[in-house]
Image: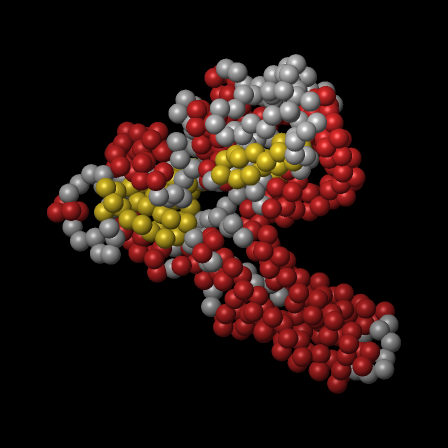
Length: 468
């Protein structure tokens, strides 16, 4: 938990991480190949064997690693020194292998010496530059999250000061909430008092606060639970500072931030590099899926245009990640284009649905343009389905924990949809069941669960009687 919790530039971070892992080994092999060719020699099986062994060792050893502290806080100089020593270690292994096999005499010593010297001259600057680029990308303003503290204690003040000292953690501390008077609290330093605990939930909603640290003593358990109830109508990530694990909520886990013990009470499952994995998977699978789907989309667009008046693409306003409004694309399947305000859900034999639209909705073909939303980063392939803005505002006050579903990107499909909660939700119980599955997805996310949901979606497209 000492790494930045959430990375919005996840695709960029993923590309840089891939380069950090593979580029040093690639340079080791390329330099060897170019030196051999420049000497007029053939890159024969002996050199190929050396390249394979050196490349494999470099993939393992010439990688920037944590080594007991947040990687992003590691000084570039330490990385440079470690890369040099690791390359020397690789050379020792290669020499030992050469002498044990008797093959060392078959490689020109002058060529091997030049190779041994040139590699670190290239690999070390590349590793340092990639590390600097990763750090700048991670701590960019896009990734900084506004944070507040509920409760002013020595532990919470210490954590706030550490977060201010280390921008690598991507937190901007706005201040504290506490019911005690300033006289009882004592010196607060540079941290403003923003209000009492009762003011916290409204402040979080009005100022788009993304992280809340609850630092109340464990003896105030009831007050902590009341705070959690008030905050269920927000999308903020919630952490408990004392080191006693008493809750089991969304993505609960214990850990530390800069040496201070914290407990995650409510967090996105896609923190840190889990978000990178999710984003890369979305982009790769979407690009692969668009190849066979694009001709189908062109035919559908033509049919929609020729059979009814109105736009081919219907743009819907929905709530996305952290409750921010996004635009979602669909093929128009109705004669009307209802969006904001009062939105009536489609029903069986709904007269608003066009003949072509009925077929599109039956097989979920109207959702295909949302692949573009995935590439834009507004949606994911798998996640809670986005609801109409009007429905969100209605149900967030009726269903406890409703807004927590917005801690992840909305999905083209989701656990609720493959579990039978698809189509019209004309009762509160139906919406509660859908939200229950959405929260279960947040609690239990894994790449395997996403893959299972995608497979079930393909199967149910042709068997779902609730699609209309």
